[in-house]
Length: 117
Image 1 (cartoon, one colour):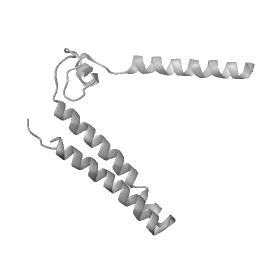
Image 2 (cartoon, rainbow, N blue to C red):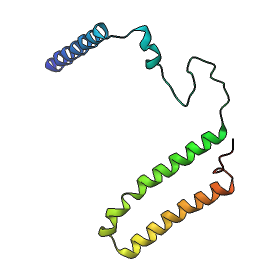
Image 3 (cartoon, rainbow, N blue to C red):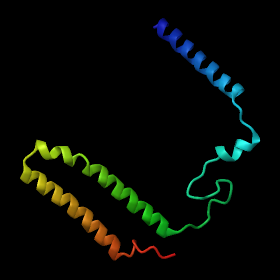
Image 4 (cartoon, helix red, strand yellow):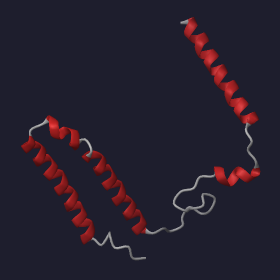
């Protein structure tokens, strides 16, 4: 028990020393301040947070994320082709692709895919 206490104390001390060395030896200057600031979607983090943005941009982003996750779910279906019965694999694949197409049809119906500014 005492050994674990000493080890955690030593590791904490080493971590603290390394962090202080990093702060002392870093070459940060005033010119690097803009590089270190967060940048997301073209918004300046130091300005007013209530600036309106395009809802269409948000919807396109959501569509991208949904289809990106669905493509990641399709990849395991390829090796699964050799492991399971062909009929079962076809049914699962057909259902999955059908759900993708229904989602795409719904987005098209709602005019989410029209890129009009």
